[in-house]
Amino acid sequence: MSMPFYVPPEQMMQEKGDFARKGIARGRALVALQYDNGIVLVAENPSNNLRKIGEIYDRIAFAGVGKYNEFDDLRQAGVRAADYTGLQYSRRDVEGRALANKYAQLIGQSFTHESKPLEVEILIAEVGHEKESDRLFHITYDGTVIDEQQCCILGGDAEAVRQRLKENLQPDAPLSHAIATAASALSGPDRALNSEELEVALLERGDNRRCFKRLSHDQVGELLK
Amino acid sequence: MPLPLFQPSEDPGSNFNEFIKKMGYLPSYTFPGGSIEVPHGTTCVALRFVEGVVIAGDRRATAGNRIANRDMEKVVQTDDFSAVAIAGAAGRAMEMIKIFALSLEHYEKIEGRRLSLEGKANQLSSMVRDNMSAAMSGLGVLPLFAGFDEHDSQGRIWSYDGTGGRYEEHEYAAIGSGSDYAGTVVKVGWKSDLNETAAINLACRALWEAAEADSATGGPDGLRNIYPIVALIDQNGWRRINDSDLAEIFTSIAQEMRTR
Image 1: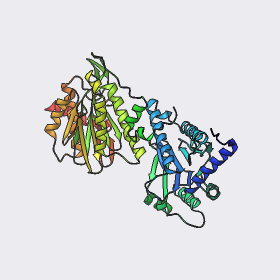
Image 2: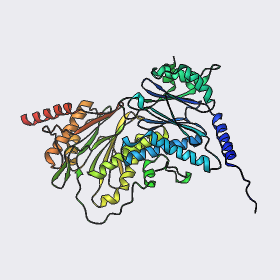
Image 3: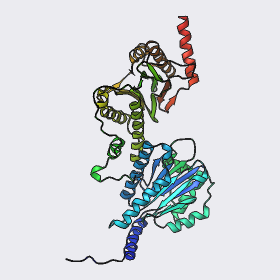
Image 4: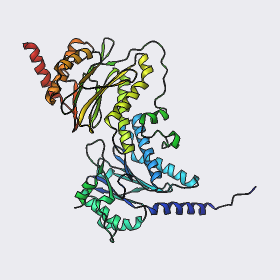
Protein backbone atom coordinates (compact mmCIF):
# COMPACT_ATOMS: atom_id res chain seq x y z
CA MET A 1 0.00 0.00 0.00
CA SER A 2 1.35 3.36 -0.92
CA MET A 3 1.54 6.04 1.74
CA PRO A 4 0.47 9.58 0.91
CA PHE A 5 3.35 12.03 0.96
CA TYR A 6 3.67 13.99 4.16
CA VAL A 7 3.09 17.68 3.56
CA PRO A 8 3.90 19.97 6.49
CA PRO A 9 0.85 22.02 7.54
CA GLU A 10 2.71 25.33 7.03
CA GLN A 11 3.34 24.40 3.43
CA MET A 12 -0.20 23.18 2.86
CA MET A 13 -1.75 26.39 4.23
CA GLN A 14 0.72 28.47 2.29
CA GLU A 15 -0.15 26.73 -0.95
CA LYS A 16 -3.88 26.85 -0.37
CA GLY A 17 -3.60 30.53 0.47
CA ASP A 18 -1.61 31.21 -2.69
CA PHE A 19 -4.18 29.33 -4.72
CA ALA A 20 -7.10 31.29 -3.26
CA ARG A 21 -5.32 34.64 -3.59
CA LYS A 22 -4.50 33.92 -7.21
CA GLY A 23 -8.15 33.15 -7.96
CA ILE A 24 -9.36 36.30 -6.22
CA ALA A 25 -6.74 38.51 -7.86
CA ARG A 26 -8.06 37.55 -11.30
CA GLY A 27 -11.34 39.41 -10.65
CA ARG A 28 -12.00 43.13 -10.43
CA ALA A 29 -12.06 44.93 -7.10
CA LEU A 30 -14.94 46.23 -5.03
CA VAL A 31 -15.14 49.09 -2.57
CA ALA A 32 -17.55 49.92 0.24
CA LEU A 33 -17.47 53.20 2.10
CA GLN A 34 -19.53 55.37 4.39
CA TYR A 35 -21.17 58.50 3.03
CA ASP A 36 -23.27 61.11 4.79
CA ASN A 37 -26.44 58.99 4.79
CA GLY A 38 -25.31 55.38 4.90
CA ILE A 39 -22.97 53.00 3.15
CA VAL A 40 -22.32 52.82 -0.58
CA LEU A 41 -20.96 49.71 -2.31
CA VAL A 42 -19.25 50.12 -5.67
CA ALA A 43 -17.92 47.27 -7.80
CA GLU A 44 -16.23 47.23 -11.13
CA ASN A 45 -18.49 44.84 -12.98
CA PRO A 46 -18.84 44.67 -16.77
CA SER A 47 -21.95 42.48 -16.41
CA ASN A 48 -25.32 43.97 -15.62
CA ASN A 49 -26.78 40.57 -14.78
CA LEU A 50 -24.24 38.65 -12.75
CA ARG A 51 -24.13 40.73 -9.65
CA LYS A 52 -21.51 41.04 -6.94
CA ILE A 53 -23.66 43.02 -4.53
CA GLY A 54 -26.94 41.84 -3.06
CA GLU A 55 -29.54 42.52 -0.40
CA ILE A 56 -29.48 40.17 2.59
CA TYR A 57 -31.92 41.75 5.02
CA ASP A 58 -33.48 45.04 6.11
CA ARG A 59 -30.19 46.71 7.01
CA ILE A 60 -27.65 44.22 5.68
CA ALA A 61 -25.98 43.89 2.29
CA PHE A 62 -23.62 41.32 0.85
CA ALA A 63 -20.73 41.85 -1.53
CA GLY A 64 -18.39 39.25 -2.94
CA VAL A 65 -15.44 39.00 -5.28
CA GLY A 66 -13.65 36.01 -6.76
CA LYS A 67 -15.38 33.01 -8.23
CA TYR A 68 -18.97 33.98 -9.06
CA ASN A 69 -20.69 30.65 -8.37
CA GLU A 70 -18.97 30.35 -5.01
CA PHE A 71 -19.81 33.79 -3.67
CA ASP A 72 -23.31 33.69 -5.09
CA ASP A 73 -23.97 30.44 -3.21
CA LEU A 74 -22.74 32.19 -0.09
CA ARG A 75 -25.04 35.15 -0.77
CA GLN A 76 -28.08 32.89 -1.11
CA ALA A 77 -27.17 31.04 2.08
CA GLY A 78 -26.98 34.40 3.84
CA VAL A 79 -30.44 35.45 2.61
CA ARG A 80 -31.82 32.13 3.80
CA ALA A 81 -30.17 32.31 7.21
CA ALA A 82 -31.35 35.89 7.74
CA ASP A 83 -34.94 35.28 6.58
CA TYR A 84 -35.15 32.15 8.72
CA THR A 85 -33.85 33.88 11.85
CA GLY A 86 -36.32 36.72 11.25
CA LEU A 87 -39.17 34.23 10.90
CA GLN A 88 -38.25 32.22 14.01
CA TYR A 89 -37.58 35.22 16.25
CA SER A 90 -38.05 38.80 15.14
CA ARG A 91 -36.75 41.04 12.37
CA ARG A 92 -34.73 42.90 14.97
CA ASP A 93 -32.85 39.75 15.87
CA VAL A 94 -31.15 39.54 12.49
CA GLU A 95 -27.70 40.97 12.95
CA GLY A 96 -24.70 41.50 10.70
CA ARG A 97 -22.19 40.33 13.28
CA ALA A 98 -23.86 36.95 13.80
CA LEU A 99 -24.06 36.46 10.05
CA ALA A 100 -20.40 37.42 9.57
CA ASN A 101 -19.41 34.83 12.17
CA LYS A 102 -21.39 32.15 10.36
CA TYR A 103 -19.68 33.02 7.11
CA ALA A 104 -16.28 32.96 8.82
CA GLN A 105 -17.04 29.55 10.25
CA LEU A 106 -18.04 28.14 6.88
CA ILE A 107 -15.23 29.69 4.85
CA GLY A 108 -12.60 28.85 7.47
CA GLN A 109 -13.82 25.27 7.65
CA SER A 110 -13.64 24.93 3.92
CA PHE A 111 -10.14 26.46 3.81
CA THR A 112 -8.77 23.98 6.36
CA HIS A 113 -10.59 20.82 5.39
CA GLU A 114 -11.49 20.91 1.71
CA SER A 115 -8.91 20.10 -0.91
CA LYS A 116 -9.89 23.22 -2.84
CA PRO A 117 -10.42 26.35 -0.73
CA LEU A 118 -13.11 28.86 -1.71
CA GLU A 119 -11.69 31.53 -4.03
CA VAL A 120 -13.75 34.33 -2.55
CA GLU A 121 -13.57 37.33 -0.35
CA ILE A 122 -16.81 38.77 1.00
CA LEU A 123 -18.19 41.74 2.86
CA ILE A 124 -21.18 41.94 5.18
CA ALA A 125 -22.20 45.58 5.48
CA GLU A 126 -24.76 46.70 8.02
CA VAL A 127 -26.15 50.21 8.22
CA GLY A 128 -26.94 51.39 11.74
CA HIS A 129 -29.45 53.96 12.92
CA GLU A 130 -26.50 56.26 13.55
CA LYS A 131 -23.21 56.56 11.74
CA GLU A 132 -21.32 55.08 14.70
CA SER A 133 -23.21 51.81 14.49
CA ASP A 134 -22.45 51.13 10.81
CA ARG A 135 -20.54 47.86 10.42
CA LEU A 136 -18.28 46.52 7.68
CA PHE A 137 -17.25 42.90 8.24
CA HIS A 138 -14.65 41.80 5.74
CA ILE A 139 -14.19 38.02 5.54
CA THR A 140 -11.18 36.68 3.66
CA TYR A 141 -10.69 33.35 1.85
CA ASP A 142 -9.35 31.63 5.01
CA GLY A 143 -12.21 32.74 7.26
CA THR A 144 -10.45 35.68 8.91
CA VAL A 145 -12.96 38.37 9.93
CA ILE A 146 -11.85 41.98 9.89
CA ASP A 147 -14.08 44.64 11.45
CA GLU A 148 -13.28 47.48 9.03
CA GLN A 149 -13.77 51.17 9.77
CA GLN A 150 -15.05 53.72 7.23
CA CYS A 151 -14.19 51.70 4.15
CA CYS A 152 -13.42 48.22 2.91
CA ILE A 153 -11.70 46.98 -0.26
CA LEU A 154 -12.17 43.51 -1.67
CA GLY A 155 -10.41 41.78 -4.53
CA GLY A 156 -7.23 41.89 -6.51
CA ASP A 157 -4.92 44.85 -6.23
CA ALA A 158 -6.54 45.82 -2.92
CA GLU A 159 -3.48 47.62 -1.55
CA ALA A 160 -3.19 49.98 -4.51
CA VAL A 161 -6.94 50.69 -4.41
CA ARG A 162 -6.72 51.32 -0.66
CA GLN A 163 -3.91 53.87 -1.13
CA ARG A 164 -5.92 55.77 -3.76
CA LEU A 165 -9.11 55.61 -1.69
CA LYS A 166 -7.42 56.88 1.50
CA GLU A 167 -6.37 60.07 -0.29
CA ASN A 168 -9.94 61.23 -0.88
CA LEU A 169 -11.88 59.50 1.86
CA GLN A 170 -14.47 61.66 3.66
CA PRO A 171 -17.05 59.75 5.68
CA ASP A 172 -19.37 62.79 5.70
CA ALA A 173 -19.25 63.35 1.95
CA PRO A 174 -22.47 63.32 -0.09
CA LEU A 175 -23.32 60.26 -2.17
CA SER A 176 -22.06 61.66 -5.47
CA HIS A 177 -18.67 62.41 -3.95
CA ALA A 178 -18.46 58.95 -2.37
CA ILE A 179 -19.23 57.21 -5.67
CA ALA A 180 -16.72 59.37 -7.55
CA THR A 181 -14.07 58.60 -4.93
CA ALA A 182 -14.78 54.88 -5.18
CA ALA A 183 -14.77 54.94 -9.00
CA SER A 184 -11.44 56.73 -9.24
CA ALA A 185 -9.90 54.45 -6.62
CA LEU A 186 -11.04 51.42 -8.60
CA SER A 187 -9.86 52.74 -11.95
CA GLY A 188 -6.48 54.16 -10.97
CA PRO A 189 -4.77 57.07 -12.70
CA ASP A 190 -4.36 55.44 -16.13
CA ARG A 191 -7.97 54.89 -17.12
CA ALA A 192 -11.48 56.04 -16.27
CA LEU A 193 -14.49 53.86 -15.49
CA ASN A 194 -17.84 54.94 -16.87
CA SER A 195 -21.17 54.26 -15.20
CA GLU A 196 -21.83 51.22 -17.44
CA GLU A 197 -18.89 49.41 -15.88
CA LEU A 198 -19.94 50.08 -12.30
CA GLU A 199 -22.34 48.22 -10.10
CA VAL A 200 -23.54 50.49 -7.32
CA ALA A 201 -25.86 49.83 -4.39
CA LEU A 202 -26.65 51.63 -1.16
CA LEU A 203 -27.66 50.93 2.37
CA GLU A 204 -29.56 54.10 3.04
CA ARG A 205 -30.01 55.23 6.63
CA GLY A 206 -33.62 56.28 7.18
CA ASP A 207 -37.08 55.21 8.17
CA ASN A 208 -37.61 52.63 5.44
CA ARG A 209 -37.64 49.05 6.62
CA ARG A 210 -35.56 47.86 3.69
CA CYS A 211 -32.50 50.08 3.44
CA PHE A 212 -30.95 48.35 0.41
CA LYS A 213 -31.23 50.21 -2.87
CA ARG A 214 -29.63 49.40 -6.20
CA LEU A 215 -28.75 52.30 -8.50
CA SER A 216 -29.25 52.00 -12.24
CA HIS A 217 -26.47 52.90 -14.67
CA ASP A 218 -28.36 56.08 -15.52
CA GLN A 219 -28.65 57.10 -11.89
CA VAL A 220 -24.93 56.46 -11.39
CA GLY A 221 -24.16 58.46 -14.53
CA GLU A 222 -26.20 61.39 -13.20
CA LEU A 223 -24.39 61.29 -9.85
CA LEU A 224 -20.96 61.13 -11.50
CA LYS A 225 -21.59 64.24 -13.62
CA MET B 1 -27.71 27.30 13.27
CA PRO B 2 -24.95 27.14 10.64
CA LEU B 3 -25.47 28.73 7.22
CA PRO B 4 -28.05 26.66 5.33
CA LEU B 5 -26.26 25.20 2.30
CA PHE B 6 -27.78 22.51 0.10
CA GLN B 7 -26.54 19.96 -2.39
CA PRO B 8 -27.61 21.00 -5.90
CA SER B 9 -30.24 18.23 -6.04
CA GLU B 10 -31.71 19.35 -2.69
CA ASP B 11 -31.58 23.10 -3.26
CA PRO B 12 -34.95 24.79 -2.66
CA GLY B 13 -33.96 27.63 -5.00
CA SER B 14 -35.94 30.80 -4.44
CA ASN B 15 -38.96 29.03 -2.92
CA PHE B 16 -39.17 30.08 0.72
CA ASN B 17 -41.85 27.54 1.62
CA GLU B 18 -39.73 24.66 0.34
CA PHE B 19 -36.78 26.03 2.24
CA ILE B 20 -38.55 26.28 5.61
CA LYS B 21 -40.03 22.81 5.11
CA LYS B 22 -36.50 21.50 4.73
CA MET B 23 -35.52 23.35 7.89
CA GLY B 24 -38.38 21.65 9.76
CA TYR B 25 -40.36 24.85 10.36
CA LEU B 26 -43.59 23.52 8.86
CA PRO B 27 -44.17 20.10 10.44
CA SER B 28 -46.72 17.95 8.65
CA TYR B 29 -49.49 17.78 11.24
CA THR B 30 -52.05 15.04 11.28
CA PHE B 31 -55.33 16.30 12.62
CA PRO B 32 -57.47 14.10 14.83
CA GLY B 33 -61.23 14.28 14.48
CA GLY B 34 -63.24 16.81 16.47
CA SER B 35 -62.67 20.52 16.60
CA ILE B 36 -61.22 23.18 18.87
CA GLU B 37 -62.61 26.64 19.30
CA VAL B 38 -60.28 29.29 17.95
CA PRO B 39 -60.85 32.91 16.97
CA HIS B 40 -62.13 33.43 13.45
CA GLY B 41 -61.74 36.42 11.23
CA THR B 42 -64.64 37.59 9.14
CA THR B 43 -65.55 39.95 6.31
CA CYS B 44 -63.21 41.24 3.60
CA VAL B 45 -63.85 42.63 0.13
CA ALA B 46 -61.74 43.61 -2.84
CA LEU B 47 -62.89 45.43 -5.96
CA ARG B 48 -61.30 46.78 -9.09
CA PHE B 49 -61.47 50.37 -10.15
CA VAL B 50 -60.03 52.12 -13.17
CA GLU B 51 -56.49 52.64 -11.83
CA GLY B 52 -56.14 49.65 -9.54
CA VAL B 53 -57.81 47.75 -6.71
CA VAL B 54 -59.31 48.56 -3.34
CA ILE B 55 -59.06 45.95 -0.60
CA ALA B 56 -60.81 46.26 2.75
CA GLY B 57 -61.67 44.24 5.83
CA ASP B 58 -63.29 44.62 9.23
CA ARG B 59 -61.25 44.27 12.43
CA ARG B 60 -63.19 41.72 14.48
CA ALA B 61 -62.21 38.17 15.40
CA THR B 62 -64.77 35.95 17.12
CA ALA B 63 -64.61 32.68 19.01
CA GLY B 64 -68.15 31.36 19.05
CA ASN B 65 -70.29 34.17 20.42
CA ARG B 66 -67.37 35.92 22.06
CA ILE B 67 -65.54 38.84 20.47
CA ALA B 68 -61.95 37.64 20.70
CA ASN B 69 -60.24 40.66 19.19
CA ARG B 70 -61.39 44.13 18.13
CA ASP B 71 -58.42 45.42 16.21
CA MET B 72 -57.14 42.51 14.20
CA GLU B 73 -55.44 43.41 10.91
CA LYS B 74 -56.84 40.99 8.38
CA VAL B 75 -55.82 43.03 5.38
CA VAL B 76 -52.07 42.98 5.11
CA GLN B 77 -49.68 44.51 2.61
CA THR B 78 -47.52 41.68 1.29
CA ASP B 79 -45.15 43.71 -0.88
CA ASP B 80 -45.10 47.05 -2.71
CA PHE B 81 -47.83 46.00 -5.16
CA SER B 82 -49.93 43.35 -3.44
CA ALA B 83 -52.03 42.63 -0.38
CA VAL B 84 -53.85 39.71 1.16
CA ALA B 85 -57.13 39.76 3.07
CA ILE B 86 -57.95 36.70 5.04
CA ALA B 87 -60.90 34.92 6.66
CA GLY B 88 -60.91 31.82 8.82
CA ALA B 89 -58.94 30.52 11.79
CA ALA B 90 -57.13 33.66 12.91
CA GLY B 91 -53.87 32.18 14.18
CA ARG B 92 -53.20 30.10 11.10
CA ALA B 93 -54.35 32.93 8.87
CA MET B 94 -51.89 35.42 10.30
CA GLU B 95 -49.07 32.87 10.12
CA MET B 96 -49.94 32.17 6.50
CA ILE B 97 -49.85 35.86 5.57
CA LYS B 98 -46.55 36.34 7.38
CA ILE B 99 -44.90 33.46 5.55
CA PHE B 100 -46.46 34.51 2.24
CA ALA B 101 -45.10 38.06 2.56
CA LEU B 102 -41.71 36.67 3.52
CA SER B 103 -41.73 34.32 0.56
CA LEU B 104 -42.28 37.23 -1.84
CA GLU B 105 -39.40 39.17 -0.33
CA HIS B 106 -37.22 36.05 -0.25
CA TYR B 107 -37.82 35.40 -3.95
CA GLU B 108 -37.02 39.01 -4.77
CA LYS B 109 -33.73 38.89 -2.88
CA ILE B 110 -32.58 35.52 -4.21
CA GLU B 111 -33.53 36.20 -7.84
CA GLY B 112 -32.91 39.93 -7.92
CA ARG B 113 -36.38 40.69 -9.28
CA ARG B 114 -40.00 40.54 -8.12
CA LEU B 115 -42.34 37.63 -8.86
CA SER B 116 -45.06 38.44 -11.39
CA LEU B 117 -48.49 39.11 -9.86
CA GLU B 118 -49.77 35.82 -11.24
CA GLY B 119 -46.74 34.06 -9.75
CA LYS B 120 -47.62 35.50 -6.37
CA ALA B 121 -51.24 34.36 -6.70
CA ASN B 122 -50.01 30.85 -7.52
CA GLN B 123 -47.65 30.77 -4.57
CA LEU B 124 -50.56 31.63 -2.26
CA SER B 125 -52.62 28.89 -3.86
CA SER B 126 -50.07 26.24 -2.91
CA MET B 127 -50.05 27.53 0.66
CA VAL B 128 -53.83 27.18 0.91
CA ARG B 129 -53.54 23.66 -0.48
CA ASP B 130 -50.90 22.79 2.13
CA ASN B 131 -53.40 23.83 4.78
CA MET B 132 -56.09 21.44 3.52
CA SER B 133 -55.83 18.81 6.25
CA ALA B 134 -56.18 21.56 8.86
CA ALA B 135 -59.17 22.91 6.96
CA MET B 136 -60.82 19.49 7.30
CA SER B 137 -60.59 19.91 11.10
CA GLY B 138 -62.20 23.33 11.06
CA LEU B 139 -58.98 25.34 10.91
CA GLY B 140 -59.46 26.49 7.38
CA VAL B 141 -58.03 29.72 6.04
CA LEU B 142 -59.36 31.46 2.96
CA PRO B 143 -57.41 34.35 1.50
CA LEU B 144 -58.28 37.00 -1.02
CA PHE B 145 -55.39 38.28 -3.06
CA ALA B 146 -55.29 41.67 -4.74
CA GLY B 147 -52.55 43.59 -6.41
CA PHE B 148 -51.44 45.84 -9.20
CA ASP B 149 -50.00 44.02 -12.21
CA GLU B 150 -46.99 46.05 -13.34
CA HIS B 151 -46.90 44.27 -16.70
CA ASP B 152 -50.56 44.81 -17.62
CA SER B 153 -50.89 48.11 -15.70
CA GLN B 154 -54.12 47.09 -14.01
CA GLY B 155 -55.46 45.89 -10.70
CA ARG B 156 -56.24 42.18 -10.39
CA ILE B 157 -58.04 40.06 -7.80
CA TRP B 158 -57.98 36.36 -6.99
CA SER B 159 -60.19 34.31 -4.69
CA TYR B 160 -59.47 30.78 -3.48
CA ASP B 161 -61.27 27.66 -2.35
CA GLY B 162 -60.20 25.30 0.44
CA THR B 163 -58.31 22.99 -1.90
CA GLY B 164 -56.09 25.76 -3.20
CA GLY B 165 -58.29 26.39 -6.24
CA ARG B 166 -57.51 29.83 -7.60
CA TYR B 167 -60.04 31.99 -9.42
CA GLU B 168 -59.35 35.34 -10.96
CA GLU B 169 -62.21 37.77 -10.30
CA HIS B 170 -62.76 40.47 -12.88
CA GLU B 171 -64.94 42.80 -10.86
CA TYR B 172 -64.92 42.14 -7.13
CA ALA B 173 -64.72 39.39 -4.50
CA ALA B 174 -65.82 39.01 -0.89
CA ILE B 175 -64.92 36.44 1.76
CA GLY B 176 -65.90 35.56 5.31
CA SER B 177 -69.11 35.25 7.29
CA GLY B 178 -70.45 38.62 6.13
CA SER B 179 -69.43 38.09 2.52
CA ASP B 180 -72.98 37.60 1.20
CA TYR B 181 -74.02 41.04 2.44
CA ALA B 182 -70.80 42.79 1.52
CA GLY B 183 -70.64 41.06 -1.86
CA THR B 184 -74.20 42.06 -2.72
CA VAL B 185 -73.56 45.71 -1.89
CA VAL B 186 -70.49 45.75 -4.13
CA LYS B 187 -72.32 43.89 -6.86
CA VAL B 188 -75.12 46.45 -6.95
CA GLY B 189 -72.78 49.45 -6.84
CA TRP B 190 -69.96 48.23 -9.09
CA LYS B 191 -69.34 49.84 -12.45
CA SER B 192 -66.42 49.44 -14.81
CA ASP B 193 -65.59 53.15 -14.63
CA LEU B 194 -65.40 53.49 -10.84
CA ASN B 195 -62.86 56.05 -9.75
CA GLU B 196 -60.73 55.87 -6.63
CA THR B 197 -63.07 57.77 -4.32
CA ALA B 198 -66.15 55.89 -5.47
CA ALA B 199 -64.37 52.56 -5.03
CA ILE B 200 -63.28 53.42 -1.49
CA ASN B 201 -66.81 54.57 -0.60
CA LEU B 202 -68.29 51.40 -2.04
CA ALA B 203 -65.93 49.18 -0.05
CA CYS B 204 -66.81 51.06 3.15
CA ARG B 205 -70.51 50.76 2.41
CA ALA B 206 -70.13 47.02 1.85
CA LEU B 207 -68.40 46.55 5.21
CA TRP B 208 -71.04 48.70 6.90
CA GLU B 209 -73.87 46.55 5.60
CA ALA B 210 -72.04 43.35 6.52
CA ALA B 211 -71.53 44.61 10.08
CA GLU B 212 -75.24 45.56 10.26
CA ALA B 213 -76.38 42.08 9.38
CA ASP B 214 -73.62 39.74 10.57
CA SER B 215 -72.76 39.66 14.28
CA ALA B 216 -69.29 38.31 13.58
CA THR B 217 -68.34 41.38 11.52
CA GLY B 218 -67.26 44.49 13.36
CA GLY B 219 -68.45 47.92 12.26
CA PRO B 220 -66.62 51.21 12.66
CA ASP B 221 -65.92 51.68 16.38
CA GLY B 222 -65.91 55.41 17.14
CA LEU B 223 -65.64 54.77 20.87
CA ARG B 224 -62.23 53.12 20.53
CA ASN B 225 -61.29 54.77 17.25
CA ILE B 226 -61.02 51.47 15.45
CA TYR B 227 -61.97 51.53 11.78
CA PRO B 228 -61.87 48.86 9.11
CA ILE B 229 -58.68 48.62 7.10
CA VAL B 230 -59.20 50.09 3.66
CA ALA B 231 -56.29 50.26 1.24
CA LEU B 232 -55.75 50.80 -2.43
CA ILE B 233 -53.04 49.55 -4.73
CA ASP B 234 -52.32 51.30 -8.00
CA GLN B 235 -49.24 52.06 -10.07
CA ASN B 236 -47.75 53.95 -7.14
CA GLY B 237 -48.09 50.91 -4.88
CA TRP B 238 -49.99 50.29 -1.66
CA ARG B 239 -51.67 53.13 0.22
CA ARG B 240 -53.73 52.68 3.36
CA ILE B 241 -56.60 55.13 3.85
CA ASN B 242 -56.09 56.89 7.16
CA ASP B 243 -58.56 56.64 10.02
CA SER B 244 -59.70 60.26 9.95
CA ASP B 245 -60.76 59.92 6.30
CA LEU B 246 -62.55 56.67 7.13
CA ALA B 247 -64.29 58.32 10.08
CA GLU B 248 -65.65 60.92 7.68
CA ILE B 249 -66.87 58.33 5.20
CA PHE B 250 -68.63 56.29 7.89
CA THR B 251 -70.16 59.42 9.40
CA SER B 252 -71.69 60.30 6.08
CA ILE B 253 -73.00 56.74 5.67
CA ALA B 254 -74.61 56.99 9.14
CA GLN B 255 -76.05 60.38 8.20
CA GLU B 256 -77.59 58.92 5.09
CA MET B 257 -79.11 56.07 7.13
CA ARG B 258 -80.73 58.56 9.50
CA THR B 259 -82.32 60.66 6.82
CA ARG B 260 -83.53 58.06 4.37
